[in-house]
Length: 102
Image 1 (cartoon, rainbow, N blue to C red):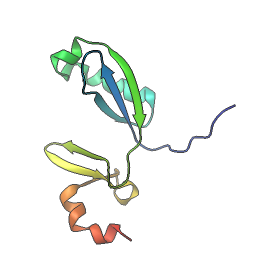
Image 2: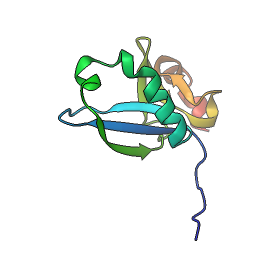
Image 3: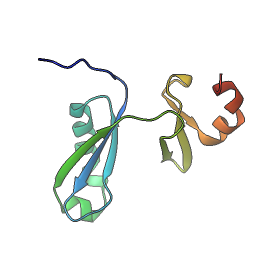
């Protein structure tokens, strides 16, 4: 039996490392893409992560208006189809909030 896929969009893959509390989060469309991205950034991770092996993985999807991230010093909020890549800078969202409530 195969279960239907309910969501084909971006997901958050969190990788947990032995002895470390904070996971590494990767945005990707599927597990294979997430693991490729993790392997691409592994050399840039702090030393304590490079010295440990991942032991756990969780997958979540972004929640409209709740999921947030910081990129290049700017805060972003997940707005889904309301933007081209699903993310909108928090300041811009606050300015356009009435438009998004429709």
